[in-house]
Amino acid sequence: MFSQKSKIYVAGHEGLIGSAIMRRLKADGYRNIVTRGRGELDLSDSPRVDAFFMAEKPEFVFLAAGRSGGIVANIAYPSSFIHENISIQDNVFEAAERNGVTRLVFYGSSCMYPISSPQPISEEYLMTGPIEKTSEPYAIAKIAGVVACRAYNNQYKSKRFIALVPNSVYGQNDNFSLESSHVMAGLIRRFHEAKTEGVRRIHLWGTGNPRREFMHADDAASASVFAMLNHDKLDNTHYNIGTGEDSSIAELACMIAGTVGYNGEVAWNTARPDGAMRKILDSSRFSSLGWRPQVTLHDGIKSTYEWFLASEYARALI
Image (cartoon, rainbow, N blue to C red):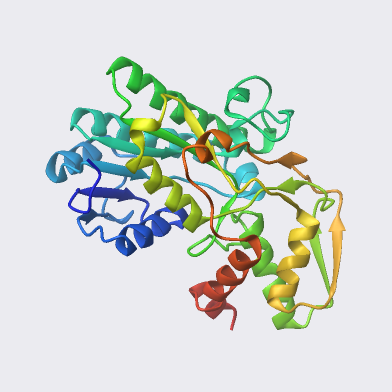
């Protein structure tokens, strides 16, 4: 039973989703939480992962660790994306199974779905067509993780492994690096820098036409805890989690510019790739169980920018 006394391991506790899970667990009164920083435990090192699980014996695991990034990073480091993520997944799944973990939540990605999927994208579209080339290595690693959850459950006759698929998560502790950030964090930093430096015209990738669904990390965390608490309602399959609303990148840029207070011009570099033209998830299967997102896009952008202003990213720009 997932309770306040349960021993919980949050892998990737300093990252975007992991830190949101930590905030949610602590707010709900969970205190028996185990964490290890990347310097303390390399999850791609199988013997060290085994030793950690044998010593700590966590009952519940949130596997929020892994390598992620936007289009630029995916193009630059494809082998790193597929190798690191598959290694981490495989090691943690095996250690969890061998050491009797009660339940584990794994996170897929909306980029797993075919680029030509009907919109909104339902779970049944997985592996029914080609995926977006710019994120293919990362997507394949995430597909492997989702399939592995089903495989472990089938082989060991359980529903121990839970696969959730969030869409474009953002928020506190996001990666704001211009080289490896996702679109939300990248735009927040770009507009902040343009405002600070007095730049009157900002150039952004693509046409601005692609539409994306954005989910605050706090909502991803609430869905994760909900899944742990309601595991008996879940089938042995993956579940989309999202807001059910999308915005064009141009609309997003306008919202961020308003939040940041940037009044200059936005120009679109159409020679750069757009990626998939639309990605919105059909999250009805999961929401039918009783979960709902709570953070609006406007409030999410505002709180994310406030966190950014207090972060090391903003301090480095001074």
